[in-house]
Length: 510
Image 1 (spheres, one colour):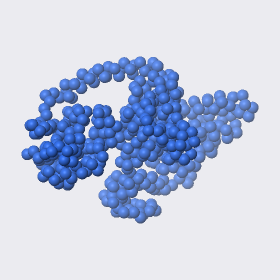
Image 2 (cartoon, rainbow, N blue to C red; image 1 turned 60 degrees about the vertical axis):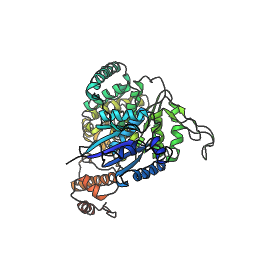
Image 3 (spheres, rainbow, N blue to C red; image 1 turned 90 degrees about the vertical axis):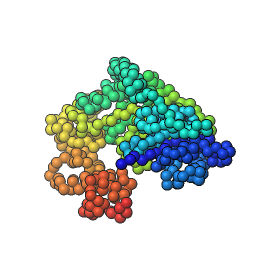
Image 4 (tube, rainbow, N blue to C red; image 1 turned 180 degrees about the horizontal axis):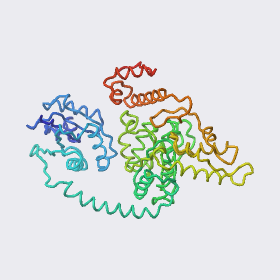
């Protein structure tokens, strides 16, 4: 089967002007290419101009070529600048990935003539690396020409570059190993945590954004503090912000500041957290909870290193490193349109994945003794307090529990048990009494402790409800898509399961 042929190009100023009859009989680069003998199955156009203007151009393009609207696609790309190489590379790569490229059944051709020289340079780089493609250019004198480069970027340049970069990374990471005592605050003996600390040590040496992923209570802020302390910004401010605790309508003001009178209630100027952390590090915990308009502003800040406070027209240059964290499934949020993909890629230059406590072999015991020593030290000298120890049965119970709230839940459970225990020993009964009966989404390895009255089928049904709800959320409440995620043959099978589990099925299958 012959592959489909796609022509991909930016719409440039010359293209618009030709369509607007500002250049006489000239057709412009794109129309010239489409009137050539080579026929394309799809014309894929990008624009950073006003979308309506470019849409009018596409209508004109159909009238002067043999292509109709079914084969011409137009996509708006919001660039910080048409000469910002990094932003152009990121935005174009993201756009082409969303189109499912590269694909074996599609042969790409990039048109390098329309747009700025920076745009042309990015087409060349992409054609030799991530999106293999032919290159063409057009001119009034010679019409359409192939653009040939007699080198392979991957084999001619990258090996030497990567060798140099690898040596630099090794030097930096080796140096970092001896200058980061703050990582000692992360109590662990498990290899899974040790590996993430190793990554964090290396990332700390670079001035790049970092995304810390992990369930609630796994210590994301502790890692962020350690990365800041191990970086060259250690002596500068570390500002931690819980994005989930900010009212959506105040998010822009809280992060980027505002001028007096910018909105109702703005009775004085506000610096905002970006400027409060200037020279240092801004930690955005639960970044996935930010509203979409604030995500746009955050993306701008990462791209251009400047912010514009609300009510102010002139941007302010910033020197703030961003560390972000979330317990959410950002990939699912991106797919559902709740989180911008371009922002995700900007934040995830460095990624730390913190394991849940149930996967940290041996750490529950180590943390128990560490927390108990800390609790005893804090209460030392108080007449009503006792120096507590923990019985083997109580320790075994702590080790066997799945800890859905992770390290945070372990600490607070132990603290309650110490306070409530009547004698010098924290017993198994004290631990059981200290465990809060909080309703949680059930997962296969998060069952309650086995005891009298445990019902296996009830627990399995709760797991099924949780996973079905998760699949429905990821699929945007489309039962056919959710059924596919769950491995069901069709949406009717899913509906049958939901009926048996007592779940509502009152929405369309697609």
